[in-house]
Image 1 (spheres, one colour):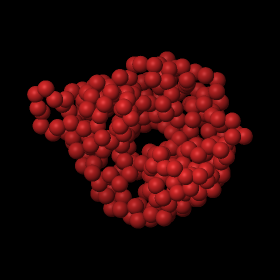
Image 2: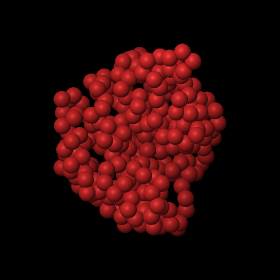
Image 3: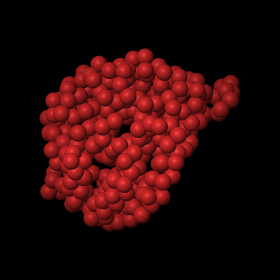
Image 4: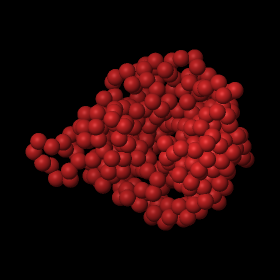
Amino acid sequence: MDFIKGFTFGWMSGKGTFLKEESKRSLSLMKKRTNSTYVILALAALQDTAQSTYIDFVGDHMPSDEELIEWIAYAQSLGLHVIMKPTVNVKDGTWRAHINFFDLDVPCEPKWGDWFTSYTAYQLHYAKLAEQTGCVMHIAGCEMVQTERREQEWRRLIDEIRKVYSGAVTYNTDKYQEGNVKWWDAVDVISSSGYYPIHDWDNQLDRIETIIEPFQKPFFFAEAGCPARTGSSLVPNDWSHEGEINVDEQADFYRAMFAACEKRPWVKGFGLWDWRTILYSEIDALQEDGYDVFGKPAEKVIADYYKRKEE
């Protein structure tokens, strides 16, 4: 597998956003400023609560198929490989890792079977779109921690995806959860979210290597990143962590992550989190404390690393 020099793009972008000229400009800048060769198209369908069984992927919170087709073609015209990533948010703010139901069906209670029926329809819709547009990979879920024990449902879902999509299929487990997925043999690529403390990368990579080695599959971090706040490098997964703006700490996190992963040839890339569809003004970059890297020191750290991966 080629090394994935990638960024995640489009998160929480509703209908019409991808067709704006600012969106295309943002994507062009992402490629130019970071030396990315891959872009992960992250979509966010909605369910009402963590125990709802219906997933809405047709409302205004989602881009239309037509605009995605046009945007994917534009990305490809820039020389970017596109990875499709349909994921799910919960309307009430609950993190998707907590979507959960009883293991045994109970009358009058929401059921796994109903949820997976809706989730499968969602995944197949975008797997077909990925096939139609030539996306190079389909990520069949992201950080769905409580669902991962439902092994047979996941295996059936992946089988169904393969009927409509001919590219590589993966699943993005959450940080620390790599060993909880017992069905890695069913996918082509293993992936997880790389939000590990700045000083703990070697320990976590040792752990992950032991877990994935028996499967003999390529591995990459489908997400990885750190907010630009003091203390965030110790809890990079915590988007709500409060701290002073600290763009240097964010850059240090990327240096540490890349240095640790560079020693592990089995790490085949990153889908860094994340690049906005509509960018803020670059003159305001040093006042932005989120995961964004546009105009911050971390942007150059990433660009230099991705450039070296060409050599």
